[in-house]
Amino acid sequence: MTDYDQRLVDLYDHDNPDGPDHDFYRTLADEVSAESVLDLGCGTGILTVTFTQGGRDVVGLDPSATMLAYARGRAGADAVNWVLGDSSSIPRDGFDYAVMTGNVAQHIPDTDWERTLLDLRQALETGGILAFESRNPAVRAWENWASRERTTRETLHGTLVEWQDVLETSPGTVELRAHNLFAQTNETVTETLLLTFREQNTLEQQLNAAGFVVEATYGDWRRNPFNEGSPIMIFVARAR
Image: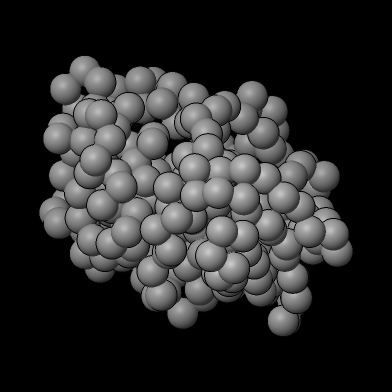
């Protein structure tokens, strides 16, 4: 993949702060008495470092060198083993808890997604827990993402002007182009993301084929049951 612009990585935690999603994954780690944690697609490590509380063995893995460099510089980073790569780069097995947060699952295309699940199953002990979320395609959230009007805000890199283009390239596949104009240098950085929206039944079948049993599917971070109008699907699956 093309790596992220450093200026956008510097803004990532501000735009994606610690919140109820992170609380969900931390609480679940406590509930399953996790001792070893794999955070696949860890990004800047804002959640990853918090898993180390209680002396847990934690691995944070991400395909972005720029994201990982940022993660290594945050408080508590020394307690995490940071790894550059995708699921094929998981350094070992024997984990009892693995997560993919921030809708990481949607950033993995179909050609790699089922392999990713198999890699995660290999990395987890029998009985280990995998948890992740994905947006509900029935809600069609992307239809509200395109921004006709440009927005402006002040950042540590000066004035930033932002707008987005969205295109559903095929059923369940959405191309998001996020444009970022740094006014100080008059430079526009465009990030192009290809997101895959998978149905609940599809994800359950893929998890089962990879060696998991779905134990719960929630529709929000308060653990209400998933229904067709829920904005997200939060899966908790056990390795069998």
